[in-house]
Image 1 (cartoon, rainbow, N blue to C red):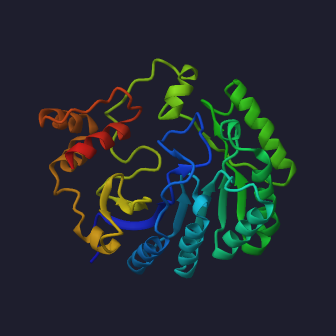
Image 2 (cartoon, rainbow, N blue to C red):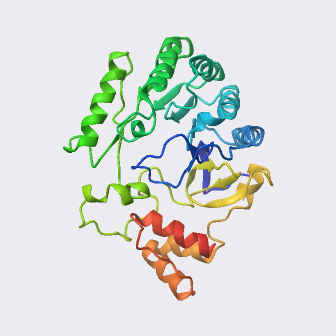
Length: 313
């Protein structure tokens, strides 16, 4: 059965939280080296289930470094292709091996699986730990195959403060991008780093000390978010959690559609406060209920909401 507050058109898969980099700008907590990856069969099955009911227009696979589990990435994308999902994207830092033969084989496998949009993370932060040579080899292999699969390929840099800000990191990013541009690979506009996670630890001096945490912003107004009662996108984590900003079930234990059928954003008091009164009142609710929530390291209202929901749901 469908619900009026759920109309999914996009599914995102966090393939792994392990990564081959240790980037200073990373806004999330990642693990270095090998770790746990998503269960490819369960993830593909969940996508098939969701596509049976909803008109899904796009999927995205990312991490961590998703190509540490390239077979899982390919399984998910081939399922999406076969389900008629038109936009099939991947975000990767491009470093998963130094072996050129394996690099070329992975590029071919991704195109064969139907990946048609690849954003390659290239900038001063990634290249502090990640050698540029294997990434460039991967980019060239993909570029050579791009016409065959209708692949959109571009570098996707992270800018410190913004692209026009004068700092040595941005200067190095521009130098690196030219190497890829000379090989025929254009860049996207990228994204601007904000002081969260590692960036708040290592790059804080580049940001204004006058930043004030604003809890009055409406739920769903931040980029890449929506209200929990207007669900258009769900994500699936390596541990199987199906998330709508926060976990609502686990695909390793339940059918994805059964999880959504049971989801009612107004059945939980904390969620109701969020939707009706906003994050500021949600924090007050948590404090009055005896939930200690430290928001001293929160950068956005979404950060506060997630912290509260971990203890209040």
